[in-house]
Image (spheres, rainbow, N blue to C red):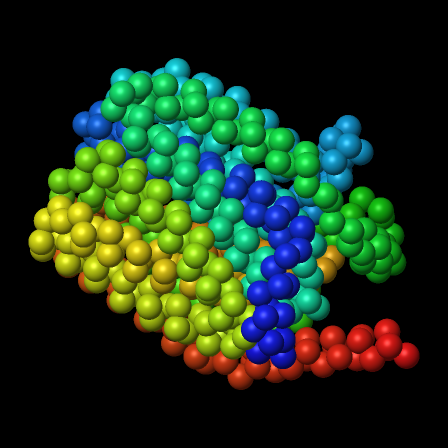
Length: 457
């Protein structure tokens, strides 16, 4: 799926206000991960909890692996009042953000060391709301940039990733540099203010225009002829049709291989990410150093490398980008093994953060674009959620055992080497799919040329 645009045209194509909207919503998508992810890991570590306990606490992220189960509701249910004011996608986003705001204020009043169960329940509530919000945000991006605009997919993915890391890294930086002075409870009250700002972002973005309602209505009519019941036809279109459509378009064998690849691709990165804050602290870095290097410097590096990765994927294609990104992502994990051997060297820490953010950003742009390419127009929320949740299943469910694995190995270097090897099976899957996606890309490009020719005539 290589682009015929020149380099200058590629750069100018980023001046699209829709990309700004995707960025703003990407910030909202990334922020809950710092609330119940790195911030909570730092708080729990400072409170004296064990590695295993911190790893298991992260199992609240498991809900991201199952959000496809309720994704059809985000595609089909119109929220009272909010739908009229904001539209289908933004109404769901705003609704979820309201719940996150309330729960964040509750977390700010809790001491997790004294009441770990309540803290876990509040974090679970944030995770469920965030996972639901992500369904709507991903669908918003797909509706705004359909796969017929193939050159826009990596750009939209890049702005989504940049937004995600901005929402994750900048608040995380502010949290860690202030945690020692105002305490983690004070940090979380400040985080509630960030949620309010993100809600304003949602209001100011524009709702995308699609043919989703017409396509869903057409599918309902088909099922109504079979069932003879409007309720059964609505349920069939809501629950069955999105998944049936995915397997029908790709074929069962290819569809299953795709799903297996998606499940395996990010596991190594997830194991590393779950234990990174614990590792930084145990190796000897302070909260301020973690905030500066991992959050602030990491954020800037991610923005730059994500844009670079999107340009590469626009020019040279998604499958090639995924192969290169996956190999580089695995190799970067070995930098952490180096730190484990040398100790808290700030220069090596900086180099590791730069390399890790480059490989993560590069592979993530290709991965998000790849998933977008696989979705259909009528059920973008449900189908993308199915694919993304499979990726999250490996990242959340299996990664919950990351603390146990470190304890079992009792060696950080070996742990990071193992995480580097975890990407290999997914790359074998991707290699087996290369010819299929070349054909898909050719079809997309051919359809685009036909549409352009019809428009000119």
